[in-house]
Amino acid sequence: MSKNTQINLLQKKERGRKKRKREEKEGKKSRKKRKKEKRQVSGKNQACKVFVN
Image 1 (cartoon, rainbow, N blue to C red):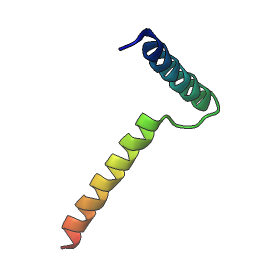
Image 2 (tube, helix red, strand yellow):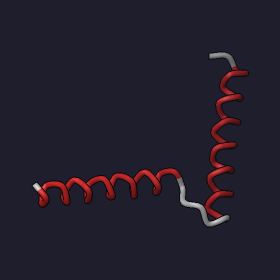
Image 3 (cartoon, one colour):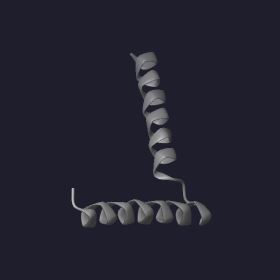
């Protein structure tokens, strides 16, 4: 990999980190937390379906 592409990748990572930090400051949930909550909700829904059946 050329040095240029490595630098670009690092900058991309940094940008993502900064964006996430900014979102957290504004009180938005991070992507990871949102995914976790979705997973939990879907699991609860499945449990409900089992009880209904």
